[in-house]
Image (cartoon, rainbow, N blue to C red; front, side, top):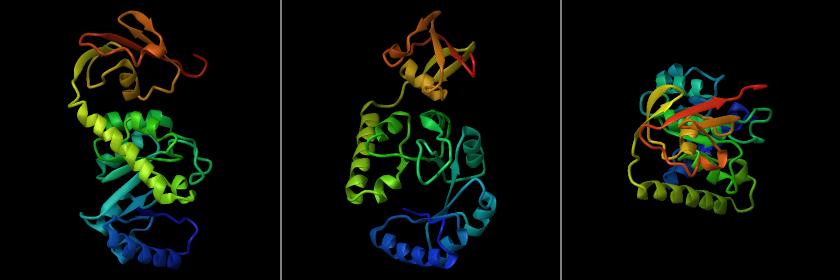
Length: 249
């Protein structure tokens, strides 16, 4: 659970943090404080979550020590790579969809979720406009952890929403485990030999973060229609061209 209140005074936030620490400790739930390492230390929280414009990660680590959790919001793969290199314990990936908690912020879309899933090795949490109605698409893009705010606190049955989201995550985890370890194959993508664990052309496109872009895929010299991507399994030795149209073409 994360305590995030952009409008509270420091004293008001501290009081809320104390109450939440008592509650979360009773149920064995980790507590993360948004933006304020000093409050996290004062109440004995498990960690802190930082934004891109907050305290540098290294300074937060100096204050909190090696045992507490430090997460950081990211909005593109460059920020994710930097957070991972600097020692973040996890990153936030979002906002995936438009959300009232980040007014004016352009959604990163499912494309960035796929990029993070393909490249980032520390845990990442998809966040932003996620609900029981769209969470499947987020999980299909590669997320294993999600954060929901409005969908939970804005619902008359917040516990029920949490249970439904957890059920969806559990279902996807079970499906991944039953499918066994991913098998890698060697293919040529835009003239370069790459080793990938993608099972289909659609999964390969997702790994490159291009699922929601204007894209033409050539498969062994022939254009592959978009509706065929999910049905076409990758094969060793396949030659693939990903032609990405930017702007006017």
